[in-house]
Image (tube, rainbow, N blue to C red; front, side, top):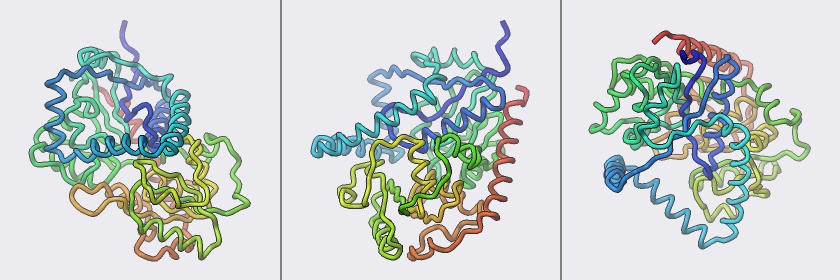
Length: 391
Protein backbone atom coordinates (compact mmCIF):
# COMPACT_ATOMS: atom_id res chain seq x y z
CA UNK A 1 0.00 0.00 0.00
CA UNK A 2 1.33 3.44 -0.92
CA UNK A 3 1.87 5.68 2.09
CA UNK A 4 -0.33 8.74 2.39
CA UNK A 5 1.15 12.04 1.19
CA UNK A 6 -0.51 13.61 4.24
CA UNK A 7 1.39 11.53 6.81
CA UNK A 8 3.96 13.83 8.42
CA UNK A 9 6.58 12.88 10.97
CA UNK A 10 7.05 15.70 13.46
CA UNK A 11 10.20 15.91 15.58
CA UNK A 12 9.85 18.37 18.45
CA UNK A 13 11.64 19.07 21.71
CA UNK A 14 9.76 17.12 24.35
CA UNK A 15 10.51 15.77 27.79
CA UNK A 16 8.07 14.54 30.39
CA UNK A 17 8.45 16.28 33.77
CA UNK A 18 10.14 19.26 32.10
CA UNK A 19 8.21 22.44 32.80
CA UNK A 20 9.28 24.75 29.99
CA UNK A 21 6.09 26.53 28.89
CA UNK A 22 7.52 27.78 25.60
CA UNK A 23 8.53 24.29 24.45
CA UNK A 24 5.01 22.94 25.01
CA UNK A 25 3.27 25.93 23.42
CA UNK A 26 5.40 26.06 20.28
CA UNK A 27 5.05 22.28 19.90
CA UNK A 28 1.29 22.52 20.16
CA UNK A 29 1.09 25.51 17.81
CA UNK A 30 2.96 23.82 14.96
CA UNK A 31 1.01 20.59 15.47
CA UNK A 32 -2.23 22.56 15.23
CA UNK A 33 -1.16 24.36 12.05
CA UNK A 34 -0.12 21.11 10.39
CA UNK A 35 -3.54 19.68 11.16
CA UNK A 36 -5.29 22.87 10.00
CA UNK A 37 -3.51 22.45 6.66
CA UNK A 38 -5.01 18.98 6.31
CA UNK A 39 -1.96 16.91 7.23
CA UNK A 40 -1.85 13.90 9.55
CA UNK A 41 1.12 14.54 11.87
CA UNK A 42 2.68 12.08 14.28
CA UNK A 43 5.08 13.29 16.95
CA UNK A 44 8.12 11.02 16.66
CA UNK A 45 9.35 9.79 20.01
CA UNK A 46 12.68 8.01 20.26
CA UNK A 47 13.40 5.57 23.10
CA UNK A 48 17.19 5.41 23.36
CA UNK A 49 19.23 2.36 24.26
CA UNK A 50 22.70 3.71 24.99
CA UNK A 51 25.60 1.39 25.62
CA UNK A 52 28.33 2.28 28.09
CA UNK A 53 30.55 3.32 25.18
CA UNK A 54 27.80 5.59 23.82
CA UNK A 55 27.46 7.33 27.17
CA UNK A 56 31.20 7.81 27.46
CA UNK A 57 31.35 9.23 23.94
CA UNK A 58 28.52 11.69 24.63
CA UNK A 59 30.20 12.79 27.86
CA UNK A 60 33.40 13.56 25.98
CA UNK A 61 31.53 15.52 23.33
CA UNK A 62 29.59 17.39 26.00
CA UNK A 63 32.88 18.56 27.48
CA UNK A 64 34.20 19.57 24.06
CA UNK A 65 31.02 21.56 23.33
CA UNK A 66 31.10 23.38 26.63
CA UNK A 67 27.70 21.93 27.52
CA UNK A 68 28.70 20.66 30.95
CA UNK A 69 26.80 23.53 32.56
CA UNK A 70 23.52 21.82 31.74
CA UNK A 71 24.49 18.70 33.65
CA UNK A 72 25.68 20.81 36.58
CA UNK A 73 22.25 22.48 36.71
CA UNK A 74 20.57 19.06 36.83
CA UNK A 75 22.69 18.05 39.83
CA UNK A 76 22.05 21.39 41.56
CA UNK A 77 18.32 20.94 41.00
CA UNK A 78 18.36 17.56 42.73
CA UNK A 79 20.34 18.95 45.64
CA UNK A 80 18.00 21.94 46.03
CA UNK A 81 14.98 19.63 46.12
CA UNK A 82 16.60 17.71 48.94
CA UNK A 83 17.53 20.85 50.86
CA UNK A 84 14.27 22.74 50.31
CA UNK A 85 11.30 20.44 50.81
CA UNK A 86 8.79 23.22 50.19
CA UNK A 87 10.42 23.92 46.85
CA UNK A 88 10.25 20.26 45.85
CA UNK A 89 6.55 20.17 46.77
CA UNK A 90 5.78 23.32 44.76
CA UNK A 91 7.65 22.13 41.67
CA UNK A 92 5.75 18.86 41.83
CA UNK A 93 2.49 20.83 41.66
CA UNK A 94 3.70 22.67 38.54
CA UNK A 95 4.98 19.45 36.94
CA UNK A 96 1.59 17.79 37.33
CA UNK A 97 -0.13 20.78 35.70
CA UNK A 98 2.28 20.84 32.74
CA UNK A 99 2.17 17.06 32.29
CA UNK A 100 -1.64 17.19 32.20
CA UNK A 101 -1.44 19.75 29.39
CA UNK A 102 0.96 17.54 27.43
CA UNK A 103 -1.22 14.48 27.96
CA UNK A 104 -4.17 16.32 26.42
CA UNK A 105 -2.52 18.39 23.69
CA UNK A 106 0.52 16.40 22.55
CA UNK A 107 0.57 12.77 23.72
CA UNK A 108 -2.39 11.61 21.56
CA UNK A 109 -0.16 12.21 18.51
CA UNK A 110 2.86 10.27 19.76
CA UNK A 111 4.47 7.42 17.83
CA UNK A 112 7.32 5.84 19.79
CA UNK A 113 10.23 4.00 18.18
CA UNK A 114 12.21 1.67 20.42
CA UNK A 115 15.91 1.95 19.56
CA UNK A 116 17.77 3.68 16.76
CA UNK A 117 17.24 0.94 14.16
CA UNK A 118 13.48 1.15 14.65
CA UNK A 119 13.71 4.94 14.42
CA UNK A 120 15.58 4.75 11.11
CA UNK A 121 13.17 2.21 9.64
CA UNK A 122 10.19 4.14 10.97
CA UNK A 123 11.18 7.25 9.05
CA UNK A 124 9.96 5.50 5.91
CA UNK A 125 6.40 5.63 7.28
CA UNK A 126 6.17 9.32 6.41
CA UNK A 127 5.90 11.34 3.24
CA UNK A 128 7.82 14.15 4.98
CA UNK A 129 9.61 14.63 8.30
CA UNK A 130 9.67 18.08 9.87
CA UNK A 131 11.73 19.21 12.84
CA UNK A 132 10.01 21.94 14.78
CA UNK A 133 11.07 25.02 16.64
CA UNK A 134 13.16 25.56 19.76
CA UNK A 135 16.92 25.24 20.24
CA UNK A 136 17.09 21.83 18.58
CA UNK A 137 20.44 22.35 16.82
CA UNK A 138 22.68 23.21 19.78
CA UNK A 139 26.24 21.88 19.44
CA UNK A 140 25.55 18.93 21.74
CA UNK A 141 22.49 17.86 19.72
CA UNK A 142 24.73 16.97 16.77
CA UNK A 143 25.63 13.66 18.39
CA UNK A 144 22.08 12.49 19.10
CA UNK A 145 21.41 12.11 15.34
CA UNK A 146 17.78 12.93 16.11
CA UNK A 147 16.93 16.62 15.93
CA UNK A 148 19.18 17.04 12.90
CA UNK A 149 17.14 14.27 11.21
CA UNK A 150 20.20 12.14 10.46
CA UNK A 151 18.02 9.09 11.17
CA UNK A 152 15.63 9.90 8.31
CA UNK A 153 15.88 7.86 5.12
CA UNK A 154 17.58 9.70 2.25
CA UNK A 155 14.44 9.32 0.12
CA UNK A 156 12.19 11.12 2.63
CA UNK A 157 12.18 14.93 2.32
CA UNK A 158 13.37 16.72 5.45
CA UNK A 159 12.09 20.15 6.52
CA UNK A 160 13.17 22.48 9.29
CA UNK A 161 10.65 24.97 10.62
CA UNK A 162 11.91 27.74 12.95
CA UNK A 163 14.81 25.63 14.14
CA UNK A 164 17.44 27.35 16.24
CA UNK A 165 21.13 26.65 16.87
CA UNK A 166 20.89 28.28 20.30
CA UNK A 167 24.37 29.80 19.85
CA UNK A 168 25.85 32.51 17.67
CA UNK A 169 28.82 30.39 16.57
CA UNK A 170 29.24 26.70 15.78
CA UNK A 171 32.48 25.24 17.21
CA UNK A 172 35.16 24.88 14.54
CA UNK A 173 35.43 21.12 15.02
CA UNK A 174 31.69 20.74 14.25
CA UNK A 175 31.38 22.96 11.19
CA UNK A 176 31.91 20.25 8.58
CA UNK A 177 29.43 17.81 10.19
CA UNK A 178 26.90 20.59 10.71
CA UNK A 179 27.09 21.54 7.05
CA UNK A 180 26.67 17.87 6.16
CA UNK A 181 23.36 17.40 7.93
CA UNK A 182 22.06 20.79 6.75
CA UNK A 183 22.66 19.76 3.14
CA UNK A 184 20.26 16.83 3.60
CA UNK A 185 17.31 19.16 4.17
CA UNK A 186 14.88 20.04 1.40
CA UNK A 187 13.84 23.33 3.03
CA UNK A 188 15.23 25.19 6.03
CA UNK A 189 13.34 27.77 8.06
CA UNK A 190 15.14 29.24 11.06
CA UNK A 191 13.99 31.41 13.94
CA UNK A 192 16.82 33.98 13.99
CA UNK A 193 18.79 35.98 11.48
CA UNK A 194 22.02 34.55 12.88
CA UNK A 195 20.65 31.06 12.23
CA UNK A 196 20.16 31.94 8.57
CA UNK A 197 23.74 33.15 8.39
CA UNK A 198 25.05 29.95 9.96
CA UNK A 199 23.12 27.76 7.50
CA UNK A 200 24.40 29.72 4.51
CA UNK A 201 27.98 29.86 5.84
CA UNK A 202 28.26 26.12 6.50
CA UNK A 203 26.10 24.51 3.80
CA UNK A 204 24.96 24.87 0.20
CA UNK A 205 21.41 25.63 1.37
CA UNK A 206 19.50 28.88 1.63
CA UNK A 207 17.49 29.53 4.78
CA UNK A 208 14.49 31.69 5.50
CA UNK A 209 13.77 33.45 8.79
CA UNK A 210 10.26 32.43 9.84
CA UNK A 211 8.01 33.11 12.79
CA UNK A 212 8.17 31.01 15.92
CA UNK A 213 5.20 28.56 15.76
CA UNK A 214 3.46 30.39 18.62
CA UNK A 215 3.21 33.41 16.31
CA UNK A 216 1.43 31.43 13.59
CA UNK A 217 -1.72 31.59 15.72
CA UNK A 218 -3.47 34.92 15.96
CA UNK A 219 -4.31 36.69 19.18
CA UNK A 220 -7.93 35.58 18.73
CA UNK A 221 -6.93 31.94 18.26
CA UNK A 222 -4.84 32.01 21.43
CA UNK A 223 -7.65 33.75 23.30
CA UNK A 224 -9.98 30.93 22.30
CA UNK A 225 -7.34 28.37 23.28
CA UNK A 226 -6.82 29.70 26.81
CA UNK A 227 -10.56 29.58 27.34
CA UNK A 228 -11.23 32.87 29.00
CA UNK A 229 -12.84 36.09 27.80
CA UNK A 230 -10.52 38.95 27.02
CA UNK A 231 -10.94 41.24 30.01
CA UNK A 232 -8.58 43.47 31.90
CA UNK A 233 -8.04 42.42 35.49
CA UNK A 234 -9.76 44.61 38.06
CA UNK A 235 -6.62 44.53 40.18
CA UNK A 236 -3.78 45.58 37.84
CA UNK A 237 -0.59 43.58 38.21
CA UNK A 238 2.93 43.34 36.86
CA UNK A 239 3.66 39.86 35.56
CA UNK A 240 7.30 38.93 36.12
CA UNK A 241 8.70 35.87 34.39
CA UNK A 242 12.44 35.51 34.84
CA UNK A 243 14.31 32.37 33.82
CA UNK A 244 17.77 33.68 34.71
CA UNK A 245 19.34 34.98 37.91
CA UNK A 246 19.92 38.59 36.80
CA UNK A 247 19.30 40.70 39.92
CA UNK A 248 18.77 43.88 37.89
CA UNK A 249 15.54 42.37 36.47
CA UNK A 250 14.12 42.08 39.96
CA UNK A 251 15.27 45.53 41.06
CA UNK A 252 13.71 47.12 37.97
CA UNK A 253 10.40 45.32 38.56
CA UNK A 254 10.33 46.53 42.16
CA UNK A 255 10.92 50.10 40.98
CA UNK A 256 7.99 49.71 38.60
CA UNK A 257 5.84 48.44 41.45
CA UNK A 258 6.71 51.52 43.53
CA UNK A 259 5.90 53.86 40.66
CA UNK A 260 2.60 52.25 39.62
CA UNK A 261 1.25 50.73 42.83
CA UNK A 262 0.65 47.46 40.98
CA UNK A 263 1.28 44.18 42.74
CA UNK A 264 3.75 41.69 41.29
CA UNK A 265 2.59 38.26 40.13
CA UNK A 266 5.53 35.98 39.34
CA UNK A 267 6.31 32.39 38.43
CA UNK A 268 9.32 31.30 40.44
CA UNK A 269 12.12 28.82 39.87
CA UNK A 270 11.46 27.89 36.25
CA UNK A 271 14.93 26.85 35.15
CA UNK A 272 16.57 26.59 38.54
CA UNK A 273 16.07 27.35 42.21
CA UNK A 274 16.78 31.03 42.95
CA UNK A 275 16.76 31.54 46.73
CA UNK A 276 16.25 35.30 46.41
CA UNK A 277 12.95 34.71 44.57
CA UNK A 278 11.35 33.20 47.66
CA UNK A 279 10.93 36.82 48.78
CA UNK A 280 10.15 38.28 45.36
CA UNK A 281 6.58 38.94 44.25
CA UNK A 282 3.23 39.39 45.96
CA UNK A 283 1.74 36.28 44.40
CA UNK A 284 3.55 33.22 43.04
CA UNK A 285 1.20 30.49 41.76
CA UNK A 286 2.57 27.03 40.96
CA UNK A 287 -0.49 25.21 39.58
CA UNK A 288 -0.01 26.92 36.21
CA UNK A 289 -0.07 24.98 32.95
CA UNK A 290 1.05 26.46 29.59
CA UNK A 291 -2.39 27.95 28.88
CA UNK A 292 -2.43 29.46 32.37
CA UNK A 293 0.94 31.03 31.63
CA UNK A 294 -0.48 32.69 28.51
CA UNK A 295 -3.53 33.83 30.48
CA UNK A 296 -1.36 35.54 33.10
CA UNK A 297 0.40 37.48 30.34
CA UNK A 298 -2.82 38.36 28.55
CA UNK A 299 -4.33 40.10 31.58
CA UNK A 300 -1.25 41.84 32.97
CA UNK A 301 -0.92 45.61 33.06
CA UNK A 302 2.85 45.25 32.53
CA UNK A 303 5.16 42.35 31.73
CA UNK A 304 8.83 42.11 32.75
CA UNK A 305 10.68 39.10 31.37
CA UNK A 306 13.92 37.59 30.09
CA UNK A 307 12.01 34.90 28.19
CA UNK A 308 11.60 34.70 24.42
CA UNK A 309 8.13 33.17 24.52
CA UNK A 310 6.90 35.49 27.25
CA UNK A 311 7.99 38.34 24.98
CA UNK A 312 6.10 36.77 22.06
CA UNK A 313 2.85 36.50 24.00
CA UNK A 314 3.26 40.02 25.40
CA UNK A 315 3.34 41.24 21.81
CA UNK A 316 0.43 39.07 20.68
CA UNK A 317 -1.73 40.39 23.54
CA UNK A 318 -0.64 44.03 23.15
CA UNK A 319 0.90 44.31 26.61
CA UNK A 320 3.26 47.01 27.80
CA UNK A 321 6.41 44.98 28.33
CA UNK A 322 10.15 45.13 28.89
CA UNK A 323 12.54 42.33 27.93
CA UNK A 324 15.85 41.80 29.71
CA UNK A 325 18.84 39.85 28.47
CA UNK A 326 19.12 36.53 30.22
CA UNK A 327 22.61 35.69 29.02
CA UNK A 328 25.84 37.63 28.87
CA UNK A 329 26.83 38.75 25.41
CA UNK A 330 29.35 36.54 23.63
CA UNK A 331 29.71 33.95 20.88
CA UNK A 332 27.86 31.33 22.94
CA UNK A 333 25.13 33.73 24.00
CA UNK A 334 21.52 32.76 23.37
CA UNK A 335 20.26 36.33 23.15
CA UNK A 336 20.07 36.35 19.35
CA UNK A 337 16.46 35.18 19.17
CA UNK A 338 15.39 38.10 21.37
CA UNK A 339 17.35 40.55 19.21
CA UNK A 340 15.91 39.04 16.03
CA UNK A 341 12.30 39.11 17.26
CA UNK A 342 12.38 42.70 18.49
CA UNK A 343 14.29 43.84 15.41
CA UNK A 344 11.83 42.24 12.97
CA UNK A 345 8.87 43.92 14.66
CA UNK A 346 10.47 47.33 15.26
CA UNK A 347 10.43 46.91 19.03
CA UNK A 348 14.08 47.48 19.84
CA UNK A 349 13.14 50.06 22.48
CA UNK A 350 11.54 47.25 24.52
CA UNK A 351 14.95 45.81 25.31
CA UNK A 352 15.93 46.99 28.78
CA UNK A 353 18.55 49.71 28.73
CA UNK A 354 18.56 50.78 32.35
CA UNK A 355 15.31 52.78 32.59
CA UNK A 356 12.29 50.69 33.56
CA UNK A 357 10.15 53.81 33.21
CA UNK A 358 10.22 53.27 29.44
CA UNK A 359 7.82 50.34 29.87
CA UNK A 360 4.99 52.80 30.50
CA UNK A 361 5.24 54.42 27.07
CA UNK A 362 2.63 53.36 24.54
CA UNK A 363 3.52 50.86 21.81
CA UNK A 364 2.29 51.45 18.26
CA UNK A 365 0.65 48.04 18.01
CA UNK A 366 -1.02 48.94 14.69
CA UNK A 367 2.45 49.09 13.16
CA UNK A 368 3.60 45.98 15.03
CA UNK A 369 0.54 44.02 13.91
CA UNK A 370 1.15 44.91 10.27
CA UNK A 371 4.71 43.58 10.51
CA UNK A 372 3.55 40.54 12.44
CA UNK A 373 0.79 39.77 9.92
CA UNK A 374 3.29 39.91 7.06
CA UNK A 375 5.71 37.67 8.97
CA UNK A 376 2.91 35.21 9.80
CA UNK A 377 1.62 35.06 6.21
CA UNK A 378 5.10 34.59 4.77
CA UNK A 379 5.89 31.90 7.33
CA UNK A 380 2.70 29.97 6.65
CA UNK A 381 3.42 30.20 2.93
CA UNK A 382 6.94 28.85 3.54
CA UNK A 383 5.49 25.95 5.55
CA UNK A 384 2.86 25.13 2.93
CA UNK A 385 5.32 25.29 0.03
CA UNK A 386 7.84 23.15 1.91
CA UNK A 387 5.29 20.43 2.61
CA UNK A 388 4.00 20.39 -0.98
CA UNK A 389 7.44 20.22 -2.57
CA UNK A 390 8.07 17.02 -4.49
CA UNK A 391 10.98 14.81 -3.35
